[in-house]
Amino acid sequence: MALTPEQIDGLRARMEDIAQPIIDWLLADIAERVAEAGKMTSTAAYEAYRAQALGASREQLEKFLKKQLGISEKELEQLFEQAAKFSSEDDFARVGVWATEAQQESLEQMVKAAIQLATKDFENLTQTMGMVDCITGRPLPLQDAYRQAMDFAFEQIFTGAADYETAIRQATRKLASRGVVAIDYASGVSTELGAAVRRNMMGGMGLLVEQITQANHDALGCDGWEISAHAASAPDHEPYQGRQYSDAEYTRLNEETLKRRIGTLNCGHYPSPIILGVNSPQYTEAELEEFRRANAEGITYEGRHYTAYEATQQRNRIESGIRRQKRRVLVSEKSGDADQLLADRIKLARLNQEYSRFCKAANLKTRPQRLQQDGFGRRQGAQVAAAGRKKCKP
Image (cartoon, rainbow, N blue to C red; front, side, top):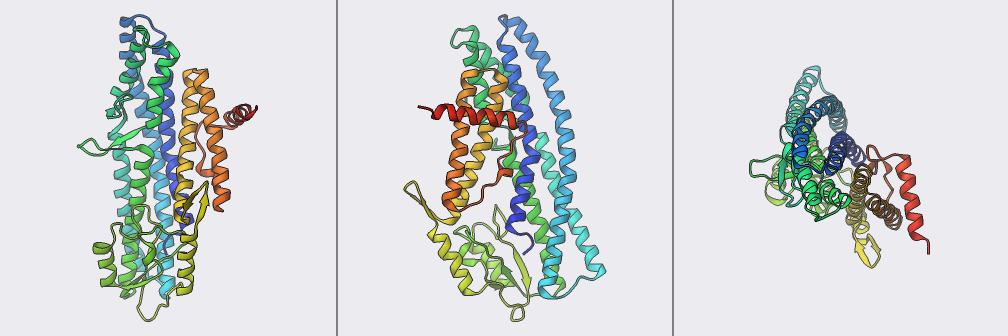
């Protein structure tokens, strides 16, 4: 197999690291601007402020994105080159043949082509960067999102519909809960930035590995494929993992049988080129059966049964919830809403406790690297822990 599940998980975590500073910057900037705008009592003064602030914000954002995505492009290339190295070496070692100099040059050309394609998709996010309407949730261009957030807070204050802190909380927290979106299609379909970055980069990674393994398959004279196997497989791919297929069978499997092709859409499996009748399967029937048995057995947590695969997905959801709640804590800090900040800290403390309990019950490792949030440091962590302890006191 080209990349292990652990390597894939590491890549996904790194992609979140790339996207998250953009989200953090935007949410913090909006909270600060809504707070500043909310203090004004003159509509004319507010309009003047808004006109100036929007231009400055857009300029600052473009500068920030250019710097951030420039760094990410280099990191992306390094990740792809590493994946290409794993894929090429593993495929040739599996069949027992080594690439010639000419074959290596051909593979390097494929790597460069795949990197360029993935980078183009990634950079396209900067052209469609936006946020969402804090009331309706529909996609808005960045400039309109700033104006809408400030307008909403200001109107709530000067009409007397809400006090200053409540207006800020309502305007900023709905934006924070939805995060940044990338409007990818003319139809208006939108995707949260972190998910869009992961999707584009993992899609490019899948394309890269697919190109290289196919080239290795052809160069080695292979006539079949073996799908890798792992514990806690998704149910749609579990019956096929660890099996060997002829070229024709593998094509039918991907094009006619499966809704998700092997190695795509968050799939942890990868195909390896083989020579049928020569390369023996990497897993015995007994080993594959044990994977199935352990997956089905899973765990029962708080009265609900989870397969092993479902448990890993629940862990992912809790991790996402913790990162999202950390962003909310940071936004509440910026907005100056003391009551909301305390509520956010208590909720985060509960999520942290639930994460530990669930992982222990499911015999899953906690993944501190997946909980990291830029701007959320030891000080915030200590304050969250203290809020949690205070809430639990009789």
